[in-house]
Length: 66
Ligand SMILES: [Zn+2]
Image (cartoon, rainbow, N blue to C red; front, side, top):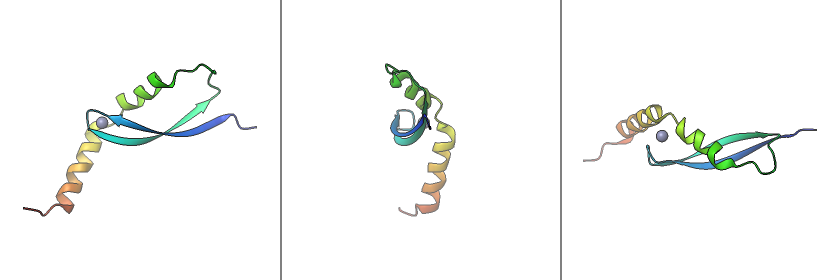
């Protein structure tokens, strides 16, 4: 019997100003488990530098513009 549940949450990173999807494994969590601080941990550990660098490269590659 599988007791691990995979759940996808959409989180918001205020540093990068972006919503991102995070797959979270809930393994034998208690019924009254408070997910909020747990999810906040994912936001905290969001790789801002990597994300912003990727966005910059994307803008450079796709940008043209003015
Ligand atoms: Zn971020």
